[in-house]
Length: 458
Image (cartoon, rainbow, N blue to C red; front, side, top):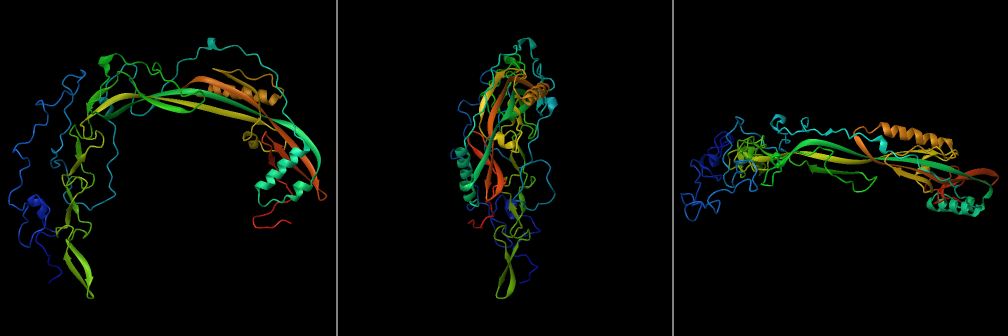
C-alpha cells in the first residue's frame, strides 16, 4: 500500500463527509456515509408538530409593570440556533484549546440616554466634587485636660524583660541576663501622635447587565436624584468600605451592541466555520504508528480520515452565546454610583533615645489625649513642642488634601509610651538595652551573648 494514497475517500484534502451529509460518522471507501441508520431522520416531535412555546399562544409582555411601549424583542429560543452566516475564514483553523472569548466592550456612549445632572457620565468612573463644607458649623476649640506621665519600671522588671527576650531567641545565652549588674535606669516617654481623616468619595459610571425581565426603574418613574443626594451610610466610622448602588430612575433597555440583539456571536475558536483541523493527526487524516520495526499509517480514528473535526465550543454551528447579554439579546443600562469610604491616617513619633521610632508604633501605651470632630483643632497645649508642631502640620495637610472627598470625621490621639534605658555591666564590659511599651518589649542590639544558629554558648 502506498503511503501517499489516502486510506479513505474525502481525506485531508477533500470535503468532510460528516459535514456534507449532516452527520459525523465514517463510511467505507468510495461510499458516502449514511447519516441515519433507517434512511430517514427520526421525527423530532412525537405528535408531528412542535409544541407551542407559550401556553397562552404568544410570548409574555416584556414589561409586566408597564415599561417602554412594545418592549425589546424576546430572547432567542432554545433549539433555534442555526449556522453562523457572517464573515468566516476561507480555510479551517488549527485547534487552539487555549482560545478565549474576546473581552466584553462597552456600548457606544452616544446610545446612552441623557439624564439631567449626569450629562458627563461615561464608562470610566469619574469622581464628583463633594458639597462645600459649611465653616459656620465648625465648633470652637474644646477644653483640654492636662497630660499624665507614663509609668516607670524597676530593676527586677528590667531583668525579667531581658530574660524573656533570651527565651525567644535560641541563640541567646541566659548567663548575661542572670549575672548582669544593673548600674542605671533612665526612664523617659515617647510620644506617638496620630491623625485620622475619614472621607467619603462618590463616582458615577454607566453600567450594563443582561436584561432578564427585571423591573426597569427609568425616567418614566421620575427625575434622577443627584449623586450626593442618595443616602448611603458607612459600616462604621474610620473603617474602609465601598458600596455600589443603582442611581434611581436612570435605567433603560437597549439592544445588545455586540450580537446586534441576536443573542449569539461568531465562535471565537473556529471563527464561524464550525470545524477545525484535527489536532490528533494535524489535519492529514492519517495517524502514524510504529510496528514490526516500520513506521505505518492508518486512518485517523478521531476524524475518520477527513483531517477535520467538529468544533466542540460551538458544537459545529460556528456561533456561541453572546458573552455580554448572555444570550438575552438585550441589556439593562443604568448609571452606577460607587461610594467609597477611606480612612486616611498619618502619624508622628517623638522619641529621643537610640530606640528606633518604628518600634513605638507596634506597642501599647497610655492614651493621654483623644479627640473626634468633623474637623479637629490643632493641639497647642502639649508639654512637648514637637507634638504641637506635628499636630498643626498634619491637620493643615489633611484639610488641603482629599479634594474629591467629603470629610465625615477627624480623630487625633496622643499616646505616651514608656521607654527605659538600662545600663549594666557584665564581665568588666558595659552594655545597654531598652525596655519599652506596656508589654515590656526589649531592644538589645548589643547583648553580649549572641551567636549564629548552630553555635553552642557555654
